[in-house]
Image (cartoon, rainbow, N blue to C red; front, side):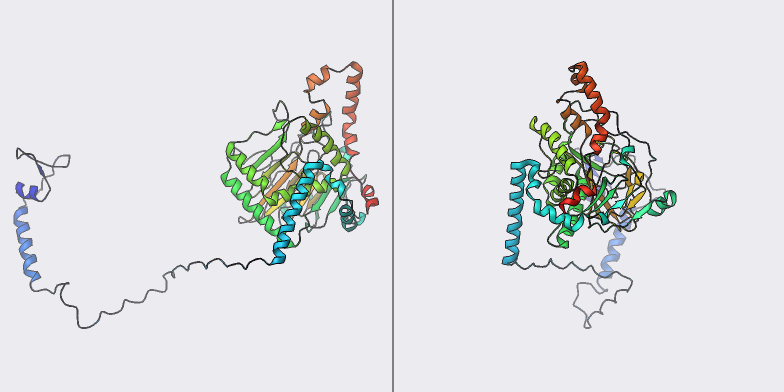
Length: 475
């Protein structure tokens, strides 16, 4: 018996004929005596006798063909249909190629003008500006609110705002209107519309969108921008807790030149290496370059005095450093990509920004602007429809703002913002010194003069705001 088991490979045998099992553990003995050798012999004899009478599967084929397989049950899913091949686009016509060439040539010429003339570039286009105002800048199109900007709060020095406490919650449109009774402002996202305070200052500007050759061009750019936002959120490295912060539950990516929040000197915001590569891709993309340049041009057009203040103070900063502008055609020194996926901000103020400065917000995504995504202007009592692809400018350091959350799970909302930290302007006006060093070098008379400037800075900053009458003569 043991020899048979060795022959069949169940046991192993040494050269001394000692048999052993290849498996570890104690063998299990059968409870009933069993003759394995006799049982195996009977099984072999039974197999041989049956194979001589039964039909072998290897015999000649039957005379009748086999029946066809039964039809499949209707409940089974149909086989997957492969997607059709991508359409073969016809080659571009000569006219299309010429238009594409002209567009690239204009962009290169505009970029060179920015490099040569800085942000004085827009002063070379008075005809375009006059045409723009003739079309849009009418007193009849403005929205009047019962609010005086002088009553807004800023820090004692006038370089930053004051942080205010609001509840950390988001609103649906119905919840917001029921709780506050705010007025809904219908806006198509196209027509530039100023919101003016009780002194006729243009406090908020519903800027619209860039003028493209056709509407489909801008829609395509916005779709590409959404895809880039999704790529950024999936690829970026976010610090722990980034999706839940004082402004809301979404993933922000911030970059550019700033001063404050622990920075000892003005400089670029620190980035993870992988995030720096993502910013390079976002900043060089055509959609975000267009949005950035458009917001800067709108600021120059509607708030020329404020724009010149930016040019002068930030120009001094760039002249004394090797800081790189994030966008060649934008005056703003910093920006944030709010990558969603459903960006909804709590009501808040961006207190570290220049209080009389402007922040630009461009909305993106796939949501119904009639039901969600509205801009909440808390201090003005307004809820403004904010369609995807549109841009709005507001003094975010002193006007509390937020946005209505989207309604459906499948909807997406992102935003692209540009802003300027008040610390940059303080650094430029304080001779590029820290406050302690700057004030230590002043005489008593100079110190008193500087104290007076600080007390008046907020009001002087408001004087930079345009009124509707200021822009009417250019119409």
